[in-house]
Length: 197
Image (cartoon, rainbow, N blue to C red; front, side, top):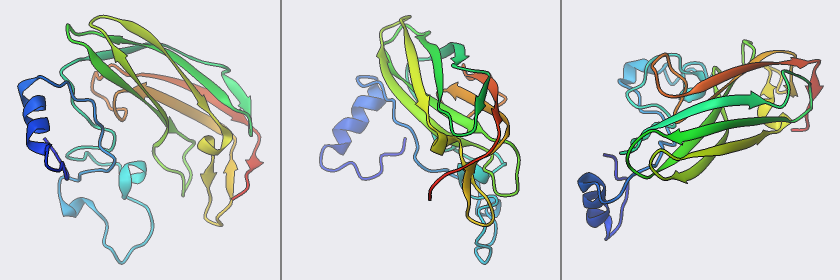
């Protein structure tokens, strides 16, 4: 358990989590690498291999990771369109179900995989939602993804939404090969739209 700087009530809070009095739902805002050898040298200032967005290895604990005494399953992922014009907003809808016998908070994390390009991230968190669910309850998740969240920055510093195939991943953490209860759906972007900086 990572408690950071819990303050004077930290001991009570930690005891409540460890004893099961409190059901945790926090998520990591950074990546914990397994070793310093997983990072490129610091004389290289490119983003390649750094942060969850560009790191292709397996971290000790990844950005967005968190534990709970409850388990969740995401289903019925639907996008407002299978193909959008660059510069348009896209809507993402799904259901999340508490598959355990204990009430808990489902943190739905929406990640985007953009088309491969030299400066494009491998993944980008583009939305999230937190819902408290009773045991075996199901609720709807609705996320709005605007053009800026769909955009990438090229080597010349130009931010734009670019044509290509994109994939959304919705679940309780970064997408992985493991059966983590997440769902994915692809869509296409037609054309290119440069955005203001």
